[in-house]
Length: 401
View 1 (cartoon, rainbow, N blue to C red):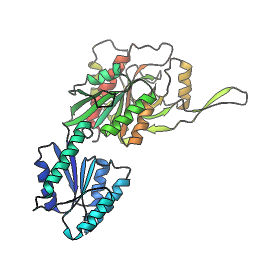
View 2 (cartoon, rainbow, N blue to C red):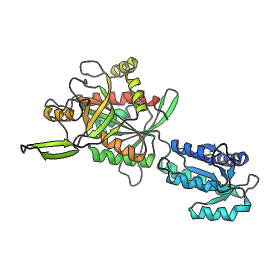
View 3 (cartoon, one colour):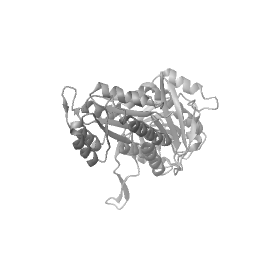
View 4 (cartoon, rainbow, N blue to C red):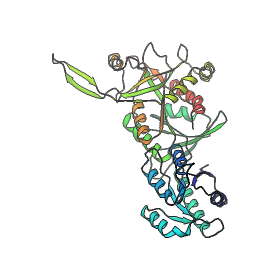
């Protein structure tokens, strides 16, 4: 269910109570937060997303200061340029001070924002606030923009997305006007929490398609995390077929310069930049991967044929490139770029880069389906997609939301 998230920034308790009471009368699924000063409200907006924000014109800058007559406008100006804040769909200035009404209205108009007089004992402002809240809720509901905690991206519908949709999340399919992607919305109930998830597959394999869908999902649905699931090639001797790799860093192994050495031989000089996993998320993933019970449950849940060897979870570098590899010599060249590399695939770096630009957290969890050599086949793709999705199902409840 879509929830309307509202933040009231006001140090007058009576006014906050009146606003909250009026909004709760609407019968909408609504979550209301309040802050009494600009500094704490700004910190909250940096960590959480809100659809409607009401800002008192006269507002304390911090908890230990008194209200300043026009501090609400200064607060608005700050959050408007703060690149760590998701700008709410709708913002209203509010005031109960009639002596500065015209001056306040002029300041609000200069910012293209409406000013609403809110007197707890008055009835005039109530219909306006109710109508604005209903309008914002209709927009939010039509776009599903506030109800997603985690967005799962896969490169392929089969077997990657199909294994994600096999998770018992009560998936519901949805399409948006003018958007060719199919979105699957579900809820993961784990560790006492209900976590809202959306899953979507890119239109095709490769960095460009995954970057496009990741950026679109991050913009449209504003998840806290983008999670890339699916399959990859592993490095022989470091990973077994079906093992999950948590990408501690990713880079485009094809980025660099082709030139000649003194003898005239063609050489490639890598110039790739790396995207790295947040250290806290890396440690959480490592902790979950080290739990024997988790690994045993994942292994036991697969009833078809499975590769020999133990199932393990690894954390390490993952190389991304535009080409499908089935040649040992090329793999050796990639290992030369980073001797600790564990996996090679075609999308991870693009998703990590998209998350950075959209201010989302990003995690890549891919499972080994082959070794990118002459024996490459599709035999273990479904099993690898399964282990990737199942490890995600154990990890999601540990993510800080």
